[in-house]
Amino acid sequence: MKIVFASNNKNKIQEIQSILPENIKIVSLEEIGCFEDIEETADTIEGNAILKANYVTEKYGYDCFADDSGLEVTALNGEPGVYSARYAGKQRNDDDNMNKLLDALKDQPDRSAQFKTVITLNLKGEQHLFTGIVKGSITLEKTGDQGFGYDPIFQPENYTKTFAELPREVKNTIGHRGKATQQLIDFLNSTK
Image 1 (cartoon, rainbow, N blue to C red):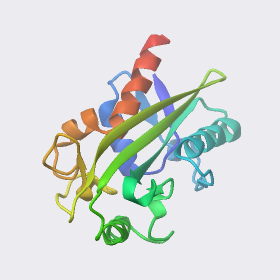
Image 2 (tube, rainbow, N blue to C red):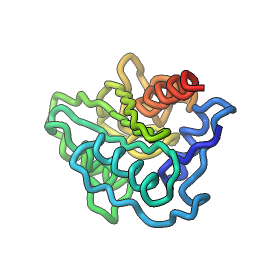
Image 3 (cartoon, one colour):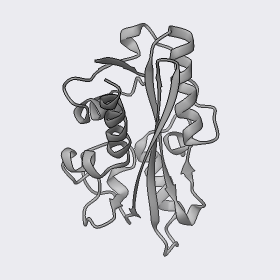
Image 4 (cartoon, rainbow, N blue to C red):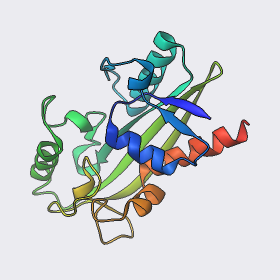
């Protein structure tokens, strides 16, 4: 089975393809001729996932799935949340985002947080949502060089290492994107 994944983020495409079984292949936006940046204008993670999937289905006519993820920090009332990718500003990068977050938490004793991913699947005229959450905490400093985004400062519950220090297979199993993707896989396998 081939299905369009509404993303141009090569890290995300690679991560999700590594979780999917061999019988499910991702078709990228580039491969269907979609080079525009799909604006993430919703005010929730669910809303952005729906917006991206609907954009591809309505404009290109493909069944597809899209995801959106965010880091929700308890002491910051759920921030950066839906703004995780652009927390330090639209033209900023992962390091800028992590530095801003670490600075915002420097006097906070509560460092609890959770990563959340929502996947929206548009398939045969129906829409399905899958949610993955992993709880953890924000470390005092960046450690590790695996992964992307906030991985060097997020330590999942019951682990002593950050996502950026854990092997990809472990992160894919316990992580938010992995959990949501597994629900997607189970659903696709049940519709055969």
